[in-house]
Length: 464
Ligand code: HEM
Ligand code: HEM
Image (cartoon, rainbow, N blue to C red; front, side):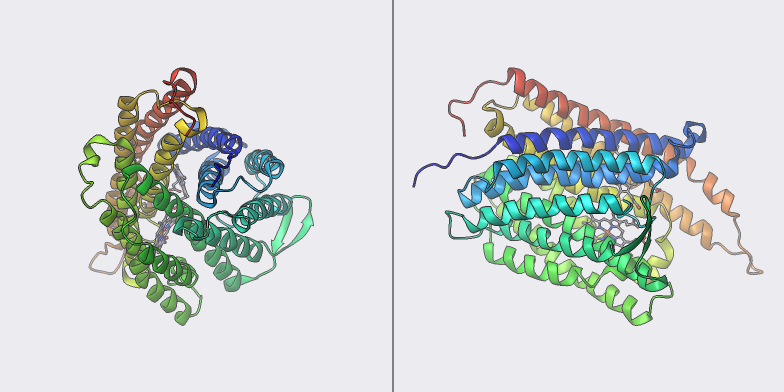
């Protein structure tokens, strides 16, 4: 079969822009972390915690997360289908539309336009931009798969297609709203129904944006990096279908102890616990793929990123189901524990896997070897330390906070005032802020290494 020519231009575009948005997300994350301990760092009206927090989450999840997935998806889909992307022009248009959407999101959020639905903050004109973005992307990927020159669909393609369909359904259903002016709309749902639809969306955003895409990437790059075949393709497909089926019922675990009907909460709790099985199906598949290859943890920096990434995913998918149990939720809900959980997933799982995929793709994209492996190792250790510092400090903080809130005097009154519990958080918030700086240092080493690879990396013999 003749060797197809792939469109790497679009992959390079998304790699570069997603890294830029990633740096913005981390910088804003550090700023809001310092605002928690130094309130004088709030600059009203535009640069207050309330305006910057959604900017941070959107830049992190959508600018860095989605942007880097787009890069990896274009790369993986072309390679696995042995087919050039269906439309180069559509892909290029998508890149600029994506950047325009992220910029419009940043500007409107800082100006205070916000639907107040978490992870779906953008007002209706931007919703339309997101839908256009997704349709363009979906058409291009689906058409490339339809025209493929390789009969079998490797599991990564299943995960990519699942994410395409999933995000589309979730976003459109949760976006049902009535515009009343250019930047103000009201949700089409009311009261508990609204909350239920919102968290059905919210938790499945975790599934369709922070789980399926990095799993697609992990399943592709782990065998590529280690040179060892995936342990079981069948297990990966079973994990895929059961994961997709089970996630859709779990949203109400964000609404335990609320007016949402009890049976809906119990259903969500049950499915959240069952989710351990398909999640660990992928974790175990990854570990068993490493059979006979564990020595590469010492010698191959890409394996370190990927295996630590999947390990964080494994921990995340044990911690998540326990948080979904009513009694445990009553303890940790609203506490610092939850951002600790979130950042093990975002800074650990998602980002580690995406860092590895970008390093792997660099020689293919630029025809040059990665400039410095010691720097890549330094990057690994800095982001690992930063991430652990962030999550561990907040887990301890969350337990202390919960304990203080629950402490009672013999007469039944609360032992601590709310303010005392806030003051007790300061040491942990300082640790979190400095852990963020360590993480940023790692990200800057990554950026430097990429820039030097492009400028001075040793050329590879043949464009791979
Ligand atoms: C089996 C899988 C998982 C389950 C059952 C689960 C469960 C939960 C629960 C119950 C909460 C709510 C905590 C609370 O507010 O009381 C939560 C929050 C969250 N989880 Fe997970 N989790 C899982 C995996 C993940 C993964 C892989 C990520 C990826 C990064 C993630 C990201 C998040 C985020 C972003 C939130 C915060 C939502 C908010 O803004 O309130 N989770 N999770
Ligand atoms: C240096 C790195 C980072 C720092 C210092 C940081 C800091 C923060 C802070 C201070 C919050 C607010 C927590 C609260 O409301 O109590 C937050 C929330 C959040 N961040 Fe980050 N962050 C970092 C990296 C990231 C990355 C890379 C992502 C995504 C890929 C991300 C996604 C999120 C999400 C989804 C939330 C909402 C959590 C929730 O509602 O519980 N963060 N971050």
